[in-house]
Structure formats: C-alpha cells, structure tokens
Amino acid sequence: MRNFLRSLIQLQELIIVMTIAFGYSIYLSNVQFIKRFVIDSSDRVSYYYSNFSYLSMLFFELIIIGILALFLETRMWRISDFSLKMSWKAIGAGILLLFVNNLILYLSLNIPFLSKASEQVTSIEFASGIVPNLPLMILTAVVINPFFEEIFLIGYLGKWFKNHSPLIFIITSTLIRMSYHTYQGVLGIYSVTVAGLLFTLYYLKYRNTVPIIVTHALYNLSYYLRNYYFEE
Image 1 (tube, helix red, strand yellow):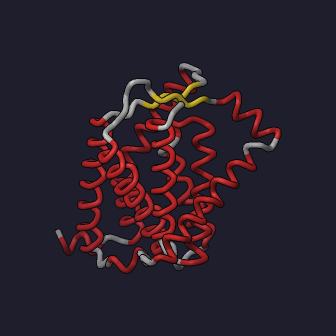
Image 2 (cartoon, one colour; image 1 turned 120 degrees about the horizontal axis):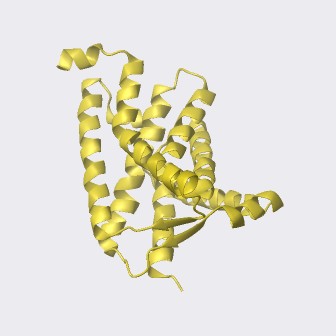
C-alpha cells in the first residue's frame, strides 16, 4: 500500500487531498444552497449550531486531519512544507490581516450597488435559545476549524502550486473555499471570496500560513461571540 501511494502522480495526490478534506462539505453546502435559494427561493440564512453540531465538526475535522497526515507523510510531505512559522510577529500580522479583511468588506458593502444587494439578498438569523458550550465552541471554531481549513487551502495548495502560476493557486484555493460556503447565500459567498483572495495574496508575498490561521480564528471568535453571547 505504501509503495502504491508513493507511486501516485502529483495531480492524483491533489485530487485525493482536496476530496477527502472538502468533498463532503462541498456536497452538503451545495445541496443546502439549491434547496434554500433555488427551490425554496429563501431570503434568509438560519444557523442551528448546537453542542452536537460542534462535537460533530470537531471529530470530523480531527479524523480528516489524521487521515491526511498519514497520507501526506507517506507521500514524503513534512510539517515544514506547510509554512507554519510561529512568532509574535506572525500573530500581529494575523490581527492586521483581520483588520484589512474587515475594512475591505465594510467599504465594499457600502458601495451603492453592493449595499443595495446586501439588503435584498439574505439576512442571517441564528436560532434563538440555542447557546453552545463556550469552551467547545472555542476549541472547534477557533482552534481546530481555522487550522483545518488553512493548512490545506493555503499551506498545502501553496506548496503544491509553488512551481505553477500564482494565479492558478489563487483561483483554485478561493474557488474551493467558496464552494463549501454556498449554504451561506450570496453575501456569505462574497465575504468568503474576499477573505480567500486576501489570504492567498498574503501567502504569496510572505509564505507563512500562521497569520492566516490567526486571522481566521479571530474572525470566527468575534463572529460567534457576537451572535451567541453578546447579541442584544
């Protein structure tokens, strides 16, 4: 088996990694998108995250990380290939990157055309009365999920496309990111696309995945705290 896995060509490896990491999420997201926005013509996005939802996500992503870690180790990948350069400077860069991302979203969504579209397309509604356990939410949404997504969308793809056109890396990473967030509706897709473009451009400039993970983690933390714990 080990010899067989090592005999796979690079494109086969890429397809296997992306399918295992994001294939199921892409399928579920687009089924929800079609049901909500195509069949039912809904103008509302509702979230029903419970403790069970977070536990399911936590175990799913940990299992996928374990499977792909074994697969990529067999394929001669090393942890250094993912450009995880931890430092206080990297954490600071992640905070700055979050500010830039939020500023771009704020300014762009106040452009007359986009502002009007944002009011008409979707509104987000978190299920009332459902407040997940805070430590579980932080472990899942702030620690594991950002690491899971960025280690493959930025760290893995950034290394894989190193000898290819940067544009191919940008398009591939951003499209995959967008494809499993379609359930969030048009505004969600737009926000994720902005973040995806910003993340890939940052990585191409600095070749460090850590600030991107930090940005993703802080965004998730502020988002869920605001909607679950500090909602007026």
